[in-house]
Length: 224
Image 1 (cartoon, rainbow, N blue to C red):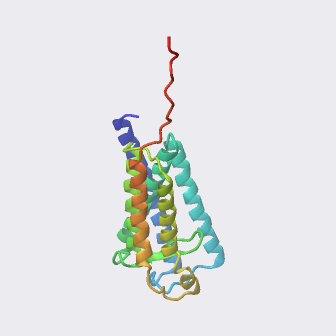
Image 2 (tube, rainbow, N blue to C red):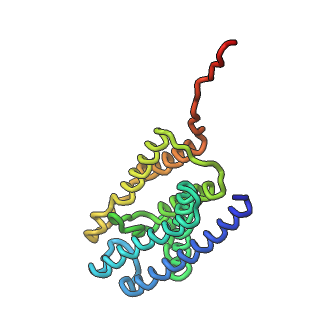
């Protein structure tokens, strides 16, 4: 794929991500008008079980939609992974832009939010989601534009696994507090920050690693 083709693909993916982010923001505007007419904040009263189950289904459908577009747009595993990361990041950023433009929320990047609901409730300051979204956009762009094909070694996989575990643990640390309707007891910044740094380290290591070649023994020609 030529550079111009990659840029054209990136443009259309960006357009999809922006439209999808607007759609997500619009849905949340409706939900907050219905369930939080006096303002959204913590401690938080969760919607009734039926509506909450619909939200869980909507979030799962969101992942399926992003994954489907990524599968169609990419030609191999790493391109598809890059497209998914890029779309997820754009979708998340535009979502907050829409909420700020319509509801003038969040008041700051340190405002707490419910970030996701699967498999448990994710909660944290808005900036934690924004930094992850920016990271996904940057990493996804590098993969889409062909800045290198990752060849992860054992340490890259270990780093990626550890990064995901730390980030998920930080985001879901306040699940029980939110579920119980009480104020979250702070955000675990150290595991979160470590997860971001380790994740980028693993990604850049995978990009810079040389693919393992196949070494053949030299053929010895018979002596005449």
